[in-house]
Length: 181
Image 1 (cartoon, rainbow, N blue to C red):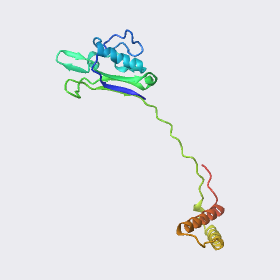
Image 2: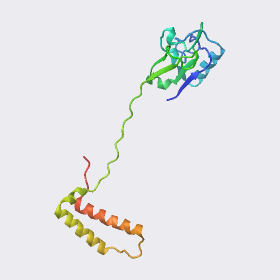
Image 3: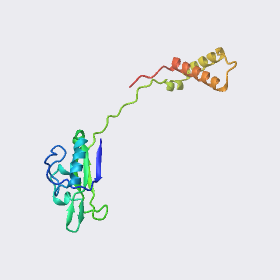
Image 4: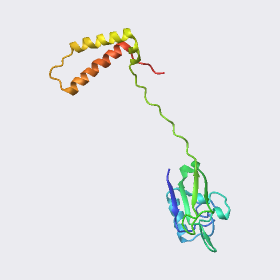
């Protein structure tokens, strides 16, 4: 999702003439040269100026107030493709983020992403080793394989890897592998 927002220092006005796709027709005031540049920028990048799409009272449109001077200089622009995610854009008229400037907020709705389950990895049913008969069988098999193994010339790491392999192979043969639930 691409969002452009901020103080653009231009007035796009309430008329959407020439910019039907970009401007919703519910702005505030009149357009100036900087406002035309903002509209051309938005039109060139296939953006919609969301401040202009909702019918609002004057207090919910004006972002700059200095005595009798009122204007909209903050804009939120979102790509055309992301229209479905935006629910509302409004000015919080009771707050000031900077002297004379009112904050502009956007309500959005995002769909939760699908959670992917980890791929099933078969595991050895080691809980079966709690049984005396199974445990004795496992010990016997590991002992036999250790006696048969060639340990000469192995370093500590290789010795550990070979021992682990013997123990895992024996556990798989005796206990079996768990199935997916």
